[in-house]
Image 1 (tube, rainbow, N blue to C red):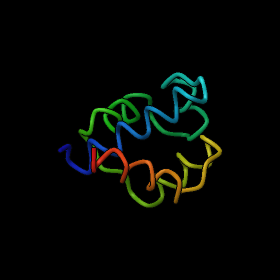
Image 2: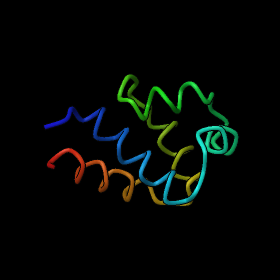
Image 3: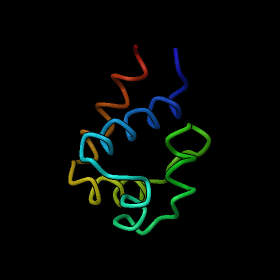
Image 4: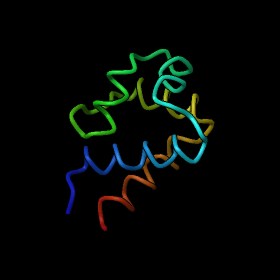
Length: 76
């Protein structure tokens, strides 16, 4: 079972790829560093609430959807 941080990273990456965005695209849209996006996707960093809102806005998904997908990844 993955950690919650890794589960979030996998969910984030799935949504990003589904939206056909690169890490660079997402970083520009969310006003976050590309390296930070990478660290989130690899489960090396844990996002703040502010970051969650930036990511969900940039991906055009609700925060609750991002958390739902994270939960699905976590229980796999």
